[in-house]
Image (tube, rainbow, N blue to C red):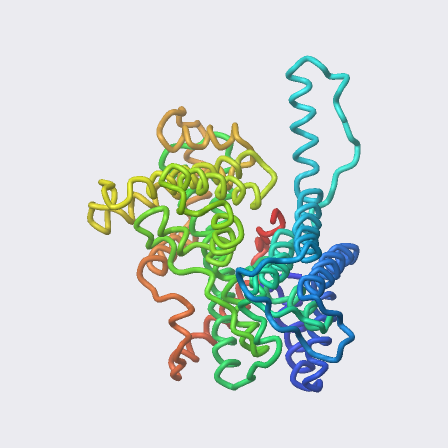
Amino acid sequence: MVFSSHLFLFYFLPTVLLLYYVVPRRAKHLFLCVLSYGFYGWANPAFVILLLFSTVVDYICGLVIARHTPFDGRYDTEPLEPGTSRTRAQKVAVTVSIISNLSLLGFFKYFNFATENYDAIVNALGMPGLELDLAFRVTLPLGISFYTFQSMSYTIDVYRGHARALRNFIDFACYVSMFPQLVAGPIIRFSEISEQLRQRTHTVTKFARGAAFICVGLAKKILIANPCGKVADVAFDAGAIGTFDAWFGVIAYAFQIYFDFSAYSDMAIGLGLMLGFVFPKNFDSPYHARSITEFWRRWHISLSSWLRDYLYIPLGGNKRGSLRTGVNLALVMLLGGLWHGASWNFVIWGGIHGLLLGIERVQGKDSLYRRLPDVVRVAITFFIVLITWVFFRAADLPDALAYLGAMFGLAATPDTAPLLGGLLYQPYYVMTFLVAIVITWGAPQTWDWTKSLPWWKVAVAVALFMLSVLVLATQAYNPFIYFIF
């Protein structure tokens, strides 16, 4: 079930909100947990078992780390003192949590990738007899990259003394499975929401702002991301494409992925507000960035901050000299690229970003890039991001290289170019493209726009919702791009 569907908007969501505000306070988390498991298991109920397994393991590990049991009569534990030594049992517990989550993620996300590459290597070495040649393939559970990171952050935060462990299993299961951010983020760390699980307010102001978030997010998805995605699909699936068409296609994809990701985040934040939760901002106008470093402070903030706090800093961060800092950044981004998908394209995408982050960190303020006018820096950064998006979008490495060749005029213009242009430059797509440009660089963020809601903003939000629903009813193209995550 996806947010941008009639089933969710007109059946699931109204039912959830009505019953949520009717059930007693003590039963709200149980209700949310049950509904969230139903939401997650809608496509494949078997995947609920994996979600439950990860939840149970981390719940038990959290109690072991806190040196308590769920039966001693208290709601939660006292946080551990940061910096003090941990017992062997505590160290084993956090290790079990990390290994179990990464093993779950590794098997389901990378098993097929690993076996395919193993078979390719032994074939290249002239040893076809060593091929695994497995007939079965592992199906990727929806959102597993998000909820494993989220659940794992709980035990790490408890171990570090940044949060108190929960004795109430239902509350913890509600945190892990909460449907607004379960399948596509933002990645909510336990320390960010632990107090809200214990106590939060439900106000008309929160509810209204949440509804505005949903209206704007739905419009970004249906009215901008989907048409831009259609253009990107035509361009990347063309096989042979002219230079101008190739640039048009990759810019359309840049708009698709931004408006799609930020739309889902907007709707997740809005749903959280309607349920009384305040989730952190996940996008901060990333295409306004003046460097790759700034881009990652603005793009998918919950992921970049997760990688910083749970991987980059434990590796040493920037405390061991410029060279080691650059290596740490490159390694983190390589793993971040692999987190996005089991493909060498994602590894290359992450590697390019990691390399550029390392170069910017080593050069510091002496970089010529930093001395250029802001508008030039924004243009250069966007240009670099476009190049890397080719690897993110292309089906495989040969396709990515062929597309880059077309972008830079290294491929012959195909005879089908006029026909392809007729598909790409339809008035509806061109108009959407221009609207995307205006909103990307000229409009306020949803986070800021919804801070106050005078009557005219309410009217705009309602109009956007109605228009989005009308278009959704006629729109056959409504992809859910998070299946690979």
